[in-house]
Length: 178
Image (tube, rainbow, N blue to C red; front, side, top):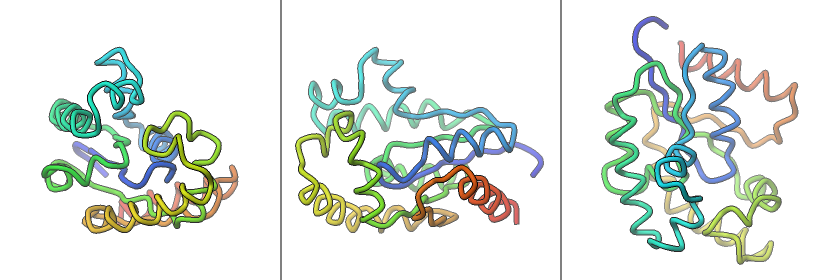
């Protein structure tokens, strides 16, 4: 691919947006931006602290503002927050500005991946395993209509072993360059 490139990785929390984004950026020789880190650095607070202080609506406004700041960046892979595509006209904005890639993962695998780091995730930190699985299922169903507007849908259900991960990244690159 030649010219200006901009990729937005979208998907539910735990879908691997940051992990895949870093590798994709490295393979394509592009800059990588994790929107959550971008927001945390801008506001000098964790996403959890922002959520607590401003509530979800306030956080979504901050997220929208961050998107408007990074939308003009070029030659970049951007890992978005899981909810970003589902608010305002964010999904349309991303589709117009670059290539969107939905990392699609089933509920079982998401629950497995999220169990270990749930304390850093404001929407699930108080939930037990069953509540978390139910929460993921309900929210994923609501969000899929936005996620499915992506230019590419890439299934990443398998756990990320290093071998499997390399193959997945190569497949993703083949798909987006086809």
